Image (cartoon, rainbow, N blue to C red; front, side):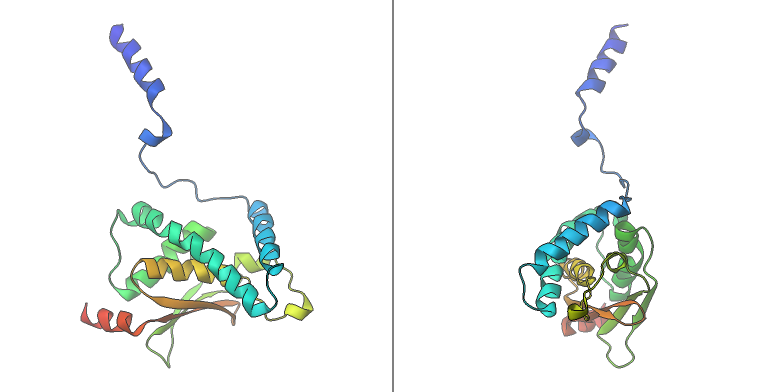
Length: 189
């Protein structure tokens, strides 16, 4: 009887910090996300004078998110192991990373025919652009710059220095331009 009371006392003392870091529930309400993202775009829009400045601001916000996500992703998905090969890292982003952020894999990953250091992640209907109506005076605005910033921060944090930009082509295309050192290292490894 005494052991049963001790077990009850021990159960009450455990906190959320004592529990192992699990996969978590990756789903959020899309309406909540759309409202929050819309507010972020409006906040940035009120502090800039051009479309390119707005996209840069959104990318910077995305980089803050990506910087915080990288460790969490590698702990949950890879058991603390980091990728060392370029293609494996890109596949990790296309599959695991995209599922964590958007609930599904990215549509396509392509390599540039012209440049060995350029890759593309293509999403035909990207979530962040789905709920944004672009005014006529800001026709070239691509709010997926936010996601491009997240991808860039994850790649840079994983020691794959790159510049990532969002473009309107086949839906939304994320152009990833890796630093020369990444390509040289990948050939050695």
